[in-house]
Length: 144
Image 1 (cartoon, helix red, strand yellow):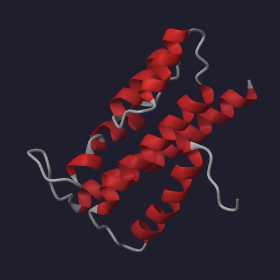
Image 2 (cartoon, helix red, strand yellow; image 1 turned 90 degrees about the vertical axis):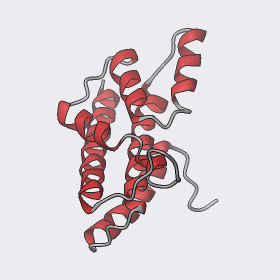
Image 3 (spheres, one colour; image 1 turned 60 degrees about the vertical axis):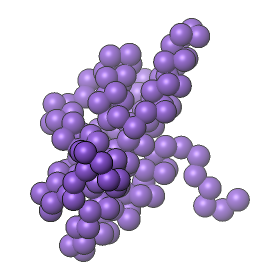
Image 4 (cartoon, one colour; image 1 turned 120 degrees about the horizontal axis):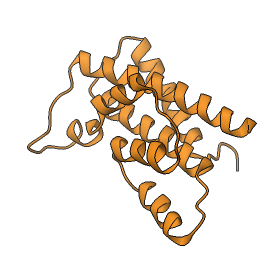
């Protein structure tokens, strides 16, 4: 089956191309804020999916549970705490700033808002930092 994607990274990269083209052409529509968080979420899930190797049933349940979250903070806690992988401060801060964009910029509610150009710029920064972190980290793990 042509074009089939099997990893979180492949899905993230597919959306990253669209995000990059839209952002770089000056199209800073509100959908990019939600897409930015979604891309980061899938990049972080790629590290967990491919590099976390549970040693018992409890760890396996924890891994499967975190792969169902949409919280960038929870994903980062798992990566740093459970996997012992250091997330650079700048990357962590950037991801923390956009955590929640997926829901708050797409659905009405008490916390909903229309993202500004600055918010979308923050999403772009987070996507770039997260992407670099994930590819660098997975490469280092594969070399071990």
